[in-house]
Image (cartoon, rainbow, N blue to C red; front, side, top):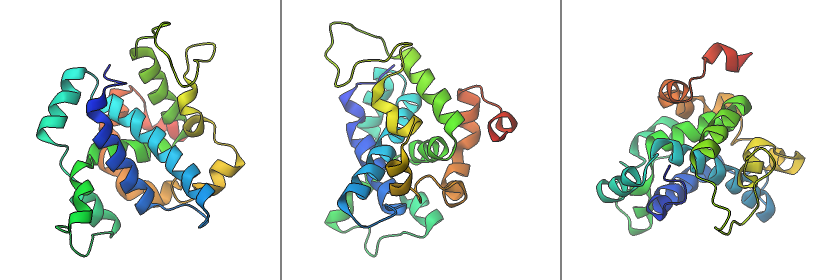
Length: 191
Protein backbone atom coordinates (compact mmCIF):
# COMPACT_ATOMS: atom_id res chain seq x y z
CA UNK A 1 0.00 0.00 0.00
CA UNK A 2 1.42 3.38 -0.95
CA UNK A 3 0.13 4.99 2.22
CA UNK A 4 3.00 7.19 3.33
CA UNK A 5 4.29 7.79 -0.22
CA UNK A 6 5.26 11.42 -0.75
CA UNK A 7 4.26 11.05 -4.41
CA UNK A 8 0.60 11.45 -3.40
CA UNK A 9 1.17 14.67 -1.43
CA UNK A 10 0.18 17.06 -4.26
CA UNK A 11 -2.95 15.03 -5.05
CA UNK A 12 -3.98 14.88 -1.39
CA UNK A 13 -3.32 18.60 -0.84
CA UNK A 14 -5.14 19.77 -3.98
CA UNK A 15 -8.10 17.41 -3.53
CA UNK A 16 -8.46 18.50 0.11
CA UNK A 17 -8.31 22.14 -0.95
CA UNK A 18 -11.01 21.56 -3.56
CA UNK A 19 -13.35 19.87 -1.05
CA UNK A 20 -12.74 22.59 1.53
CA UNK A 21 -13.58 25.31 -0.99
CA UNK A 22 -16.61 23.53 -2.45
CA UNK A 23 -18.05 22.70 1.00
CA UNK A 24 -16.82 25.45 3.37
CA UNK A 25 -16.92 25.33 7.15
CA UNK A 26 -20.24 25.86 8.90
CA UNK A 27 -19.05 29.07 10.55
CA UNK A 28 -16.51 31.63 9.33
CA UNK A 29 -14.09 31.29 12.26
CA UNK A 30 -10.60 29.87 11.84
CA UNK A 31 -11.11 26.89 14.14
CA UNK A 32 -14.18 25.71 12.21
CA UNK A 33 -12.29 26.06 8.94
CA UNK A 34 -9.37 24.05 10.33
CA UNK A 35 -11.60 21.30 11.75
CA UNK A 36 -13.51 21.02 8.48
CA UNK A 37 -10.29 20.89 6.46
CA UNK A 38 -8.85 18.20 8.76
CA UNK A 39 -11.88 16.01 8.14
CA UNK A 40 -11.60 16.59 4.39
CA UNK A 41 -7.87 15.75 4.47
CA UNK A 42 -8.47 12.51 6.37
CA UNK A 43 -11.16 11.41 3.91
CA UNK A 44 -9.02 12.39 0.91
CA UNK A 45 -6.01 10.57 2.36
CA UNK A 46 -7.97 7.34 2.78
CA UNK A 47 -9.44 7.72 -0.72
CA UNK A 48 -6.02 8.42 -2.27
CA UNK A 49 -4.44 5.42 -0.55
CA UNK A 50 -7.29 3.24 -1.79
CA UNK A 51 -7.09 4.66 -5.32
CA UNK A 52 -3.30 4.37 -5.60
CA UNK A 53 -2.49 1.26 -3.54
CA UNK A 54 1.14 0.73 -4.56
CA UNK A 55 4.22 2.88 -4.73
CA UNK A 56 4.21 2.37 -8.50
CA UNK A 57 0.64 3.70 -8.75
CA UNK A 58 1.63 6.75 -6.71
CA UNK A 59 4.69 7.35 -8.89
CA UNK A 60 2.66 7.03 -12.10
CA UNK A 61 0.06 9.55 -10.97
CA UNK A 62 2.89 11.93 -10.08
CA UNK A 63 4.20 11.61 -13.64
CA UNK A 64 0.94 11.55 -15.59
CA UNK A 65 -1.10 13.82 -13.32
CA UNK A 66 -4.51 13.07 -11.85
CA UNK A 67 -6.68 14.90 -14.38
CA UNK A 68 -7.78 18.09 -12.67
CA UNK A 69 -10.97 19.54 -11.23
CA UNK A 70 -12.85 20.68 -14.36
CA UNK A 71 -15.67 18.09 -14.18
CA UNK A 72 -16.00 18.50 -10.41
CA UNK A 73 -16.15 22.28 -10.77
CA UNK A 74 -18.87 21.94 -13.36
CA UNK A 75 -20.88 19.45 -11.24
CA UNK A 76 -21.04 21.77 -8.22
CA UNK A 77 -21.07 25.05 -10.14
CA UNK A 78 -17.77 26.34 -8.81
CA UNK A 79 -15.84 26.98 -12.01
CA UNK A 80 -13.13 29.61 -11.53
CA UNK A 81 -13.47 32.90 -13.41
CA UNK A 82 -10.15 32.26 -15.13
CA UNK A 83 -8.96 28.67 -14.85
CA UNK A 84 -5.68 29.58 -16.55
CA UNK A 85 -4.82 32.14 -13.88
CA UNK A 86 -1.59 31.42 -12.04
CA UNK A 87 -3.30 31.03 -8.66
CA UNK A 88 -5.57 28.31 -10.08
CA UNK A 89 -2.71 25.93 -10.97
CA UNK A 90 -3.44 23.73 -7.96
CA UNK A 91 -6.63 22.56 -9.71
CA UNK A 92 -4.59 20.39 -12.10
CA UNK A 93 -3.60 18.17 -9.14
CA UNK A 94 -7.18 17.43 -8.08
CA UNK A 95 -8.17 13.81 -8.67
CA UNK A 96 -11.85 13.43 -9.55
CA UNK A 97 -12.10 9.85 -8.31
CA UNK A 98 -10.30 10.60 -5.05
CA UNK A 99 -12.62 13.55 -4.35
CA UNK A 100 -15.68 11.47 -5.20
CA UNK A 101 -14.55 8.63 -2.94
CA UNK A 102 -13.71 11.10 -0.14
CA UNK A 103 -17.22 12.55 -0.46
CA UNK A 104 -18.64 9.03 -0.12
CA UNK A 105 -16.56 8.45 3.02
CA UNK A 106 -17.61 11.78 4.54
CA UNK A 107 -21.30 11.16 3.87
CA UNK A 108 -21.44 7.54 5.07
CA UNK A 109 -19.84 6.58 8.42
CA UNK A 110 -20.07 2.83 7.75
CA UNK A 111 -18.34 3.17 4.40
CA UNK A 112 -15.69 5.38 6.04
CA UNK A 113 -15.06 2.64 8.60
CA UNK A 114 -14.67 0.03 5.83
CA UNK A 115 -12.28 2.33 3.95
CA UNK A 116 -10.09 3.03 6.97
CA UNK A 117 -10.09 -0.65 7.92
CA UNK A 118 -8.92 -1.53 4.39
CA UNK A 119 -6.14 1.06 4.59
CA UNK A 120 -5.10 0.02 8.11
CA UNK A 121 -4.95 -3.63 7.04
CA UNK A 122 -2.84 -2.86 3.99
CA UNK A 123 -0.34 -0.34 5.40
CA UNK A 124 2.42 -2.33 7.05
CA UNK A 125 2.88 -1.64 10.74
CA UNK A 126 6.51 -0.96 11.51
CA UNK A 127 7.28 -0.61 15.21
CA UNK A 128 10.56 1.16 14.46
CA UNK A 129 8.95 3.86 12.33
CA UNK A 130 8.01 6.97 14.30
CA UNK A 131 4.34 7.89 13.97
CA UNK A 132 2.60 11.14 14.84
CA UNK A 133 0.05 9.12 16.80
CA UNK A 134 0.31 5.55 18.04
CA UNK A 135 -2.08 2.95 16.72
CA UNK A 136 -4.95 2.05 18.97
CA UNK A 137 -5.55 -1.47 20.14
CA UNK A 138 -6.84 -3.40 17.17
CA UNK A 139 -4.60 -1.60 14.69
CA UNK A 140 -6.87 1.35 13.85
CA UNK A 141 -4.73 4.47 13.45
CA UNK A 142 -5.61 7.61 15.39
CA UNK A 143 -4.82 9.63 12.26
CA UNK A 144 -8.40 9.12 11.04
CA UNK A 145 -10.29 9.90 14.25
CA UNK A 146 -12.00 13.03 12.91
CA UNK A 147 -13.27 11.09 9.90
CA UNK A 148 -14.50 8.10 11.88
CA UNK A 149 -15.58 9.60 15.18
CA UNK A 150 -16.19 13.35 14.84
CA UNK A 151 -17.08 15.14 18.04
CA UNK A 152 -19.70 17.89 18.29
CA UNK A 153 -17.28 20.65 17.22
CA UNK A 154 -16.17 18.58 14.22
CA UNK A 155 -19.78 18.00 13.15
CA UNK A 156 -20.69 21.68 13.51
CA UNK A 157 -17.59 22.77 11.57
CA UNK A 158 -18.23 20.33 8.71
CA UNK A 159 -22.00 20.55 8.45
CA UNK A 160 -21.83 21.15 4.67
CA UNK A 161 -18.89 18.80 4.13
CA UNK A 162 -20.76 15.85 5.67
CA UNK A 163 -24.26 16.54 4.34
CA UNK A 164 -25.19 13.52 2.16
CA UNK A 165 -27.61 15.44 -0.06
CA UNK A 166 -25.11 18.21 -0.77
CA UNK A 167 -22.33 15.71 -1.44
CA UNK A 168 -24.42 13.52 -3.75
CA UNK A 169 -23.47 15.22 -7.06
CA UNK A 170 -19.81 14.49 -6.30
CA UNK A 171 -20.14 11.25 -4.32
CA UNK A 172 -22.41 9.66 -6.92
CA UNK A 173 -19.84 10.05 -9.69
CA UNK A 174 -17.64 7.11 -8.62
CA UNK A 175 -19.49 5.52 -5.68
CA UNK A 176 -20.00 2.21 -7.50
CA UNK A 177 -16.27 1.66 -7.97
CA UNK A 178 -15.62 2.39 -4.28
CA UNK A 179 -18.36 0.00 -3.20
CA UNK A 180 -16.88 -2.66 -5.48
CA UNK A 181 -13.36 -2.06 -4.16
CA UNK A 182 -14.47 -2.29 -0.52
CA UNK A 183 -16.85 -5.18 -1.23
CA UNK A 184 -19.71 -3.16 0.24
CA UNK A 185 -23.38 -3.41 -0.61
CA UNK A 186 -25.23 -0.09 -1.09
CA UNK A 187 -28.37 -1.42 0.60
CA UNK A 188 -26.46 -2.59 3.67
CA UNK A 189 -24.75 0.78 4.08
CA UNK A 190 -27.98 2.71 3.77
CA UNK A 191 -29.67 0.67 6.52
